[in-house]
Image (cartoon, rainbow, N blue to C red; front, side):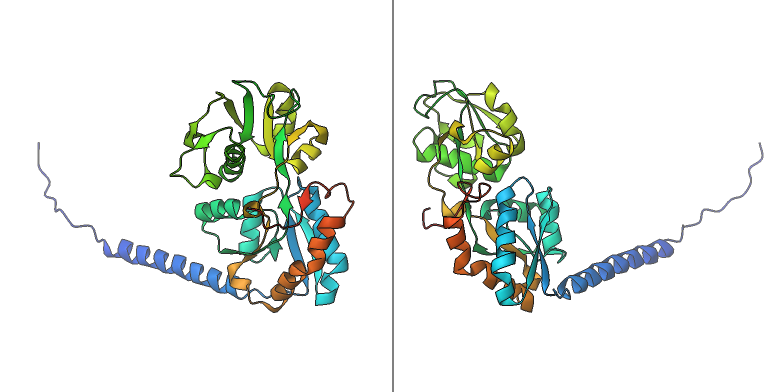
Length: 292
């Protein structure tokens, strides 16, 4: 077998290095442009305010502000329903929507921590009525040992449900954990041996007949056609879970965003929440209180 002479050559790596540097420059440049575009958003006098479609009262509130308050501040409001709350927050952070009113501070923290959105809570707007429903029992005291109780499967609202149960003495939570963000694993005392089940808030109304009790928002049980007399406990709504007017942080000083904040801070908003007979609002959304 003859042996052909051959020569080992080092592969030239510099073209790949240059290419990699160019890719990084393009990415950084694109990010920089994106940041500049985000910060250069200027809102016109018509502002889109997001509400969660499952919460009909939120839309009614935006319409009230749009009709009776916003004109006094020189702006117009457009209510925009988007079911995906994370995409709604993304739209606010990017300046596509001026604000959203669907979330409390604990949900907002959860979304920001997970996605890094630049969002700021500017003020509480209203409080949702949140309580315990049962298709089988007329009171909390009637719940038997071992009762199956449904709680929300998302962290922020599960914390609200567990904090409610602790406040009325039915369970004890790990004292080392912030109770308003507690999870099922943080239950340390369960003297009645309740069996907890996690469900999405929107599916709770359909599941009510198959469990002993469920904990959630009146608005979502209303949407599921569950009579309000199935509610067996509605404690005072705590301000810590009040809805927030959330705005993209880069836009807080925009002229029309400032007007928007003034419109929602107008005392007529709280007065309307107190006095309205709109069935989609009455007993569902209540004025912001000092109750914690």
